[in-house]
Image 1 (tube, rainbow, N blue to C red):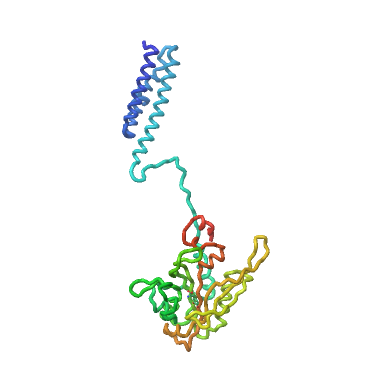
Image 2: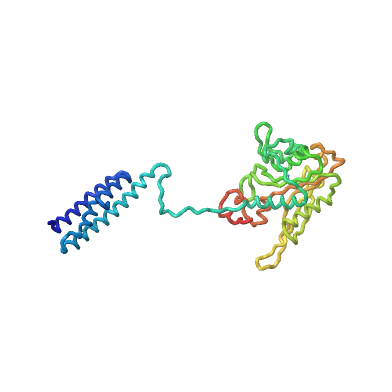
Length: 345
Ligand code: DAH
């Protein structure tokens, strides 16, 4: 008959042996072998002792039972711990370590870019006035970017200080106006287009300048288009875009490709948080004018027969005014904390 000491000693020896085997197990299969050897229901050596508790004399049962359960618990812990270690090693190699306890990554949701919003809104208004969208290349040549637009190459805009020149006589267009000429070459009047696109200038990147920015060009050419059509169309657009109560003024200006030329200013009616209304200052929102006959001729149109108006604006600047964006660089840096403010349709 076994004594209490024998059985407890045996359990402690089993514990030591199992401890060594667990440590020595190199992979999950081996570890499972250790578990079966000591804790397996049929052949496990610790389980065997537990199963035979009932055969022990009454006075031995409690102490041996307690010790067997303690060893069983210790082994279960050791096995679980070793299993975790082996799994981690198993996943070694590039990116293989998976810590399931780490909190998940936040799924940042941005929004439609404010400039995209403004471009779409402007194009939709012009679309309802009968204009369609057109496009043109960003790599241009001097003819389309300057000369055909009645801008001589010794004009300051054509200077290397302002324009980014490419090899082989090309340049990055400094405005969307070249698409006026390209479109007129391809289509006979009537032409009514809006042209959203990127333009490039040699500007330093700061709070109010960027070397690449968006513009929207507009052009309407047909028989009998007058200054009244020009003013009415742009005033209608301005009121629709900036809201009811907006005042519009046309200030004389100069552009080589329009004659006469104007800058269009708006004075907005702002609704304050407390519901009261306040007028904004006059803000300039576009350059415009009646298309210079020389430009029509350069595009192959008969300037005796056709007239038209053109305009150009910067949706980036407009987005900054509309949404109160203080620094143009927010439009370029893709910070999701900025963009999440422009969620929704
Ligand atoms: N192209 C001019 C610029 O980049 C903007 C502009 C002014 C476009 C008058 C026009 C226009 O079509 O008529 O500053």
